[in-house]
Amino acid sequence: MPRLLTHHPLPGAVRGLLSALLTVAVLTGCDRSPPEHAFLPWDIEINDHGHVSVFGVTLGESTLLDFKRLYGQKADLAMFTKPDEPITLEAYFGQMAVGPLTAKVVLIAEVDTATLERWAEQSRIADPTPSGARKLSMSDEALLEAQEKPIRSISYAPSADYDRELITRRFGEPAEVRTLADGRDEDEPPAELWLYPKKGLLITVEPGDKELFQYINPGQFDRLLAGTVTQTSGNAP
Image (cartoon, rainbow, N blue to C red; front, side):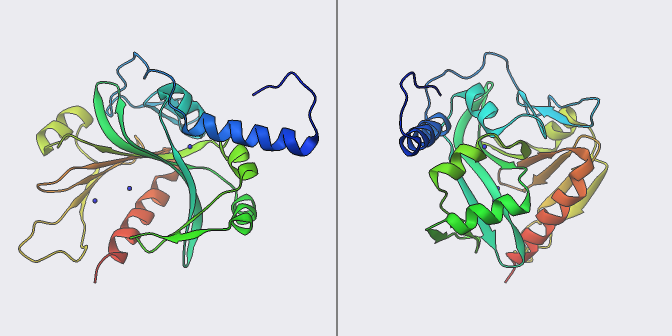
C-alpha cells in the first residue's frame, strides 16, 4: 500500500526539559481506554466551517494531542522530507482500535513552512525510508510545540478488506473513479481512486488487497488528490 504542572519552582532550563519529557510521554503513552462511541469510517460530518469531523476529531480544529488523548494510543511523531516536496509533520499510531474496527492510522498536521524549517534545522538525525523520504528527528522543544498543531488529514488503513459493494453501500457512489498507473504488471488489475470531494474523502481501492481511506477538509481535497497521484506515480520504475 500511508499528531503538565509542577508545584515546585525550578531553574528555567530544568523546567523546560521536564516539560518536554512529559510532553513526549503524553504523545507516546497509552494509559486510557479507547472511547466507547463506535466511530466508524463512514461516519463523516461537515460543520459550518466546512471542516470534516470523523473518528471523534475535527480536521483543522482538533490537535494531534486531542486524538491521542481520545484513544490513549502510542504515537511516533516525526517530520519527513523529500526532494522537491514540502516537509510534513506526521503522527503514526500504528495498528489500533478505532471503534469496533482496527486499522493503521497516520495523522498529518497543519504546520506553517517557517516552523517546519526551524524544526528541521534543529534535527540531528535523518533516517532514510523505503519511500525515498528522510525521517527527521525532533528536539524535545519541537515535540512540545508540535503536539498542539491541528490535524490536516487522516490516513486510515483498515485491517479488514472492503469490497466495492460494501464501500458503495456505506459511502455512496463516488463522484469520480480514476485508474492508477503505478507500474504494476500488465496482467495485474490496477488500483483505483474513488473520489468523494464533498466529503473530503479519497479511497484507494486495491483489487485483492486492503483499501486506504484518506480524509481532508473539502477545501483542500485537490491538494490531497495531487499528492496521492504524484506519490503513486513516483513509485513506478
